[in-house]
Image 1 (spheres, one colour):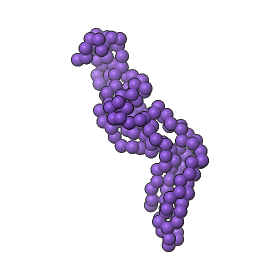
Image 2 (spheres, one colour):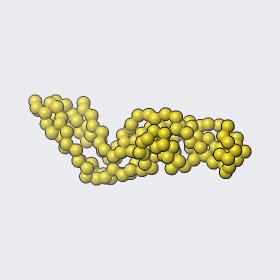
Image 3 (cartoon, helix red, strand yellow):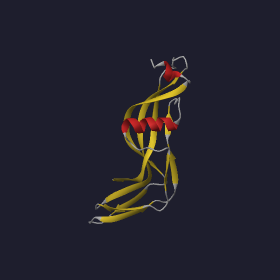
Image 4 (tube, helix red, strand yellow):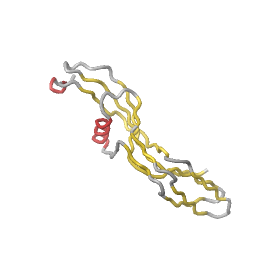
Length: 147
């Protein structure tokens, strides 16, 4: 149970419990280039749109997104943001092997975090803990794969 001084005034609490994988949120379409030659070829991709990606939260967060981000930053020593903007015109050039297709999407990388959230009342009682899953932007960039 928290100390009485921690309970007044009543407030929401978020406690991060697990850091998950990195996920890419594309801004715009997937670009692809097939190399039908017998040699490696250079593929160049350019982002075609500008888009903003923000924090996504599932579950009942009893506090602000700002508090969630601050707790995640403090516990895992990562830099996450409320939102990031991937901009039009960013390019990347990569080698595409013979008879392969290189695919590319441009957007924002987000980190997945799981935590617990509850409301702490002034009399130091709490609401039941709820699991909260969040995806917080941390980097703008490309996601590439071959098939």
